[in-house]
Image (cartoon, rainbow over all chains, first blue to last red):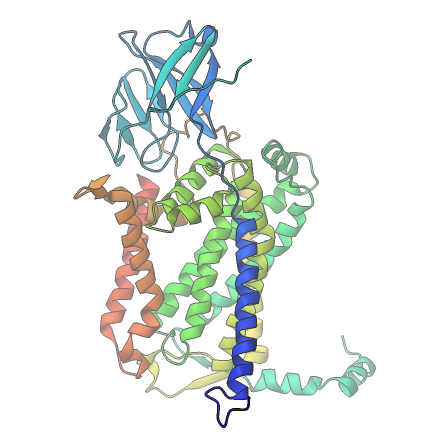
Length: 156
Length: 354
């Protein structure tokens, strides 16, 4: 069927075709490159399994560090002997914090932030408390987990 | 050296006398602020020094989490002249940033950005951003405690950016935290991606400067112009200054070798009163001004948004300053420029001495 006139000229048609081809080509390329450059990040662990023996003879008012994904966790025995596990990363700008036994507080050297014995932010810029973990024991294993996470150990 | 036959040989094929005529015909205005014309050239020279010393160190540096720190210690202790080239690379970077800032604020206060030179400003501004990223990525390659903390804070700060923060953070780090993946990624930025972008942008920047010619400050527009040819007057002054800079650079490199901190340990806290490089101090001090929570919102996010808005405004000054683009005096933007400069200097000083 031949039309007497067309809404689309030959030039518009070709421009759209080539333009569309260019857009498709470049968006595909950019998409592929970004997919490659932006990695699969993995995620923060839900829990870590440690050796209970390593943490038995920790003196009061001190911490022992353990790896938590790419960062650090603290196994913390307070001055009164009670135990707490928390993430040793400042809630402000993610610097590792340090425990100051003399002040009985946690301290972030990057921007002078302070947290008390329970991980609550008490001074400086930190907006939130330190993250507290849940501690459980299974035989010789010490399991430190994020709050609200169900720990399922692989069957040996 | 005078080789008439070689000259003739080349002249028959390429229009060399034309090039010389062009260089001699290019005129540079002379006035009481013309020392600012040299700051760009000095920065260019320092970039060349960085490329050369960087190429040398790339022969020996190992971009791997287990060997990076050790390989730098070997470069400065075991390799012939390694200490010197590493020290030159460090001080060259410091001086390059210093001269970039002088060049930037000189351009700002002289209003050389005004019409028709907006794109010279734009390319220069992008080069400044790239240079700072050069500094951050180069610093991480040391893989010592301070670099580790600085990169965690810088990439974490980018993560506080609303909506796209997580993307920028993940893209920069290459993983959830600052790990060996981040080191390799920053190495790729530092030695491949940033240099090639920089070369292109410097080419464009210099080409645009040639195209527009040198800008004369508005306050001197009425005065009678004195002009000198680029070749040989300006070029020889440039070269003499580069020689002086080389002297300063070598002196600093020999007498003040940069320290190498303790190897980064993701479990250890950073050293007491840890500070970033001096050109990040004003940012660090600004972030400290914001409390953790403002009206129930995350103070960090607000801080990042405010800082970004201020930098964006700075970037857009050539397009906002309508008066100077019409060739009129624009005291408002002079004061804005002075304000930025004073804030930058004051916060850097506070950060440095606190």
